[in-house]
Length: 417
Image (cartoon, rainbow, N blue to C red; front, side, top):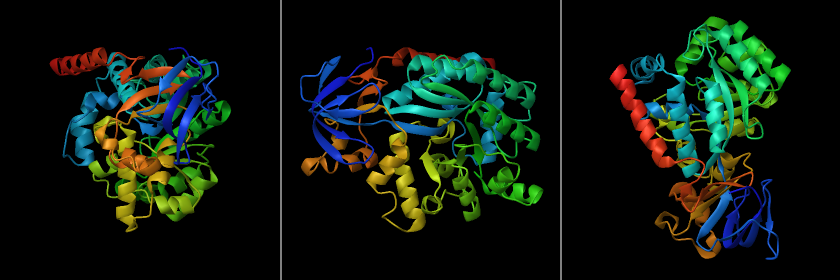
């Protein structure tokens, strides 16, 4: 359905502040909302009696097409998992496989209430096109490494020049999808490559994304080579540009936190992936916030998470932070909600008939906690006033055909390899 203002009547609404409002509301294409008088010109009137209207989730670290690798190499340590399950598969990854995986990932995002992803994966032109067709938002960061990849068989120089071209050309949906540069990590990129990526970011204004301090080995190896920890090292070579996205940050000193804050970087908490792969280090959310770091939330890829469900990721973040710090007050439902929806200008409605949302409590006071810790079904998704999902059915993607294509792609790959 085309973009426009919608009136939702008799509903409950939760905006960024986490409080429950009740009444008739207008959802405007620019992402704002207002109370309805009942006489406005709207494109649609929706009965909100059994709906909860909320902001959408924002997923700040993904490898979307790794839906193809979901549930592979279960119960393996990180490096064994990478070397036996992931890297061998990715050596033969084609643009066609990436398109199928990305479309399936976008379908999962929409079905679970997420409208934005900051992605880092191969064939970024395909990822950008597929996200644009799905209607969701994204920052598509092509991965940069010194070694050859499926996208860039000639290594980092080819990768950087390709991303520079894509950034200059712009995405097929510039109002929703941007290109960025995904320097993979300090251990896969040379100093020259990191500096060149930073230079492109400064010249174009594009986003830089990088895996940072995910494992203890990464941190100790960096210190052994450079006499500095990863974030200190990146700072020393003038890598950071405003809004750099630093994924994981599980092994970070307080000095490094202050560096991140000084550069207005986004530190992305990926609790499920880190726990599943037994990384041993969890981002210290209280210390990050005390240092003034902007913390975001991400799932990582579906291969190391098994899902792109940000509702579940929000729950995991809240629980692991409380557990690790022995403090049940950390990331209460409201703060957890703000972490998971930070930056959203889109709207989602949830099914209040879903038993997981019961009991609502007086004036709906239990709804936010129920949503985060129990779950719920997504009925509608609106981006820029456009309807991506309505009454529990995604309109911008045919979920059934995507599911068949995903099965066929996996079957085809194993038949050939």
